[in-house]
Image (cartoon, rainbow, N blue to C red):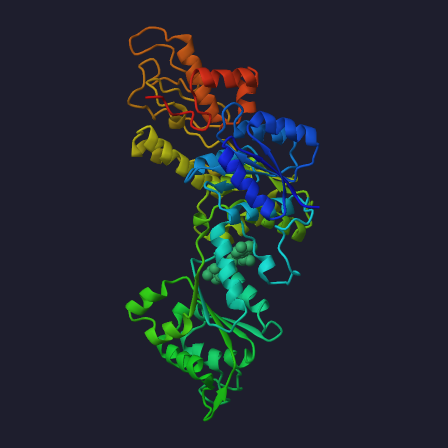
Length: 536
Ligand SMILES: Nc1ncnc2c1ncn2[C@@H]1O[C@H](COP(=O)(O)OP(=O)(O)OP(=O)(O)O)[C@@H](O)[C@H]1O
């Protein structure tokens, strides 16, 4: 049975386009033009949808409200939200509200189908739609590579094409982006898959041993050569040789490598004869090889020999769509490996945190962070506090953004560094508490740290210098009591920021119903996604 998709979008053109893409891939599609009808269709279908593709900005009930409703009423249906360009804040808000994945508008057909395929697979509700990848699973093959972004999908498309020939491939990209995984996939899907696959990390071998390790040596060829050694090229004969960190190869060894690649012959140290080898070469480097050539550290002739089919693997921060899928993948993997419950899942807050992070160590860093969290978790939920390193860096991201937005001085922003142990709390600082108006409200409560020295330039005398954390200014700059509506507006904005846009929590804490909250947002023209912004 094909997978059943509900597309929720107020734009009829967009609805038609997305529907066409899905139907051409054999999916069954229903359409909703607003949040309200989406919720009633989901209610009526009683679990009939496998996935929902949801626009966030719609008149009436918006996407975030639908997400929140689904978190309570249809938590098993994965939701893919459509977001505007570069809106990482929106993405974070949607993930926090329980979105499974996001796609940046205009959503390309490939991205949409990938996201739907992943969502259906990970919710375990695959009914065999055409978005499922064809072909049997091969260990170490492309099926082991988690992909959700179009960028990565294109890379894997290239790698698949390279796999069917013997063309030399160079994989370039930062450390931890998955170069080795792709190299292995190319090998395991190539005609040489049953032949040897030999890997060498050129950067990890002492310089004086590189030549011997690659090409081997005869007994007695040099002091200490007590036995003959075969060498990686000979080991990989008929198969594939993966040369990792090729940019670290000493220049004299580069000459020998060039000869081996050019003539298919190797010269074992101490041997008078040459040996023919038949090798498929895959190389990888975190360096920019052309820059190495320009700097004279890498031979140009070797560069052109090796770099026949270059593949650049982008860093994770440039393909954030991959983060949720990778995080879920690692959670499942480590849950299984450590004997934890297979129902171990990441909370929406944790997912939002991971998605916002820039991952300088790329997928390896994400993998390690999830591993650590799985080991530390005591329940079957991986919460944000299990990712303290990530929380810290996200705090600085948010604070610096707020500092910019509200023109808070750099000094103030620098003071705002959250402690690791407070990572589970909403990462707010005293400066965050004020809402960009003339009345800087300090927030307090168990979630935050106090900093009495942080006094904003526009702070009212009633607040300045006193321990007024958590108070809103009651007196206006003219010395009069502020209108109730002003204070209410300020409090709502603050609460939305404090609870990171979680409507149910905000309504509960303010002691009002959700519909009242929505009405007030409308009255005060507050954007729940950007509550600190004050209308000009
Ligand atoms: N798309 C992916 N899906 C699943 N796991 C991945 C993916 N990409 C990378 N990984 C995992 O992330 C880790 C780092 O990947 P890998 O070693 O291939 O990166 P690399 O670019 O070769 O790094 P380095 O340059 O440091 O050797 C590995 O454990 C790998 O299995």
